[in-house]
Amino acid sequence: MIEAVGLTKRYGAKTAVYNLSFQVRPGTVTGFLGPNGAGKSTTMRMILGLDTPTEGKVTIGGLPFRQTPNAPRQVGALLDAKAVHGGRSARNHLLSLAQLSGIPARRVDEVLGVVGLQDVARKRSKGFSLGMGQRLGIAAALLGDPQVLLFDEPVNGLDPEGILWVRNLMKRLASEGRTVFVSSHLMSEMALTADHLIVIGRGQLLADMSVTDFISTNSADFARVRTPDGEPQSREKLSAALSGAGAQVLTEPDGALRVTGLPLPRISDLAHGSDVRLWELSPHRASLEEAYMRMTQGAVDYRSTVDQKAGLTQQPQPGFGAPRQQIPEVPQQGFYAPPPPGSYAGAPAAAQAAPTAAAPADPTKPEDPR
Image 1 (cartoon, rainbow, N blue to C red):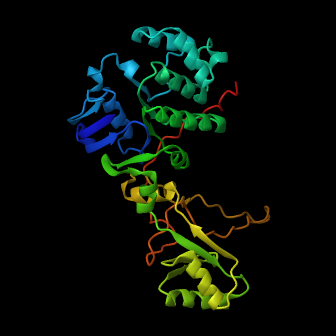
Image 2 (image 1 turned 90 degrees about the vertical axis):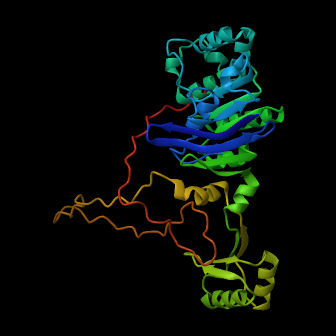
Image 3 (image 1 turned 30 degrees about the vertical axis):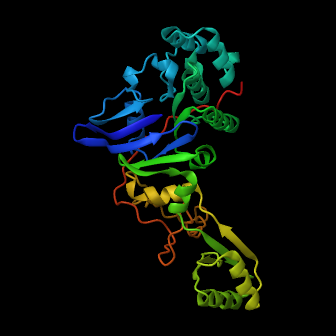
């Protein structure tokens, strides 16, 4: 089990993590979520003894990582898939790690087979794609058959087959009673993989609960009701009946009704009693992504704005082609969770006036299909 108590880390005047306390229990996959700059990587580095906490402590099995006997046999981690000497082959890289930890050489070939790199085991890692590098990093984490595993963005660069493999691997490791701690920005994948969530924002704990409880706490479920498009009077009639029964009714941009406060059978009965035909009556269950966006939208440091193209808009030259067709703006649905009834706003809140420029990501090659 991993346990953090009052964990704080400061770099000069900047506080990366503040008074963070949580437990990562064995037997479950625990997702570690938070916006960029929230302190996730710093927390993982402190767990592994790579950074020293300014205050508080973090232990693995009751001991700090640096005091854990033969730590590579107890704890496996993938923090940076590029932390490999490019001149070494995949097998030699793992073999050097095994020799440092007293792990038999046959285990190297075993984990190469587990991650699917046996065919390229003798190729230099500098020629590996991002996905192949991720597989090599996972192999290194599994090398000592540890009881505690930490993964930072383990599916980065993997193809769909690789993502499915990692998902099943995490679940299998947890089912064996191991402690599995996974950081990722892919909400859809976390919803399928994690059993429990620890969410932080700006270095502080925001949530520590199961995935189901997290979605339920940070979302508003509603029913989507649609009447025939050519019968606006039916929609108004149904809306009045639903409001009279105590429901809260909002109109969606496409004309459908968003209804909260009544179960679906009751909505159906009211529509039948009002002699209104329904084209759609469906429940809306918020996704993990919607719930996550709702909780963390106040802790996001980097927000984008609309490109105004100030001073760059060109007027069409006379006689030179036809003016470009203006595409009408479509109301943005976005991926924000639906706001509580009575406070609906069609689009997310306005972003800050001066966005912070972010460095473009390095282009990567697709994963080697071998």
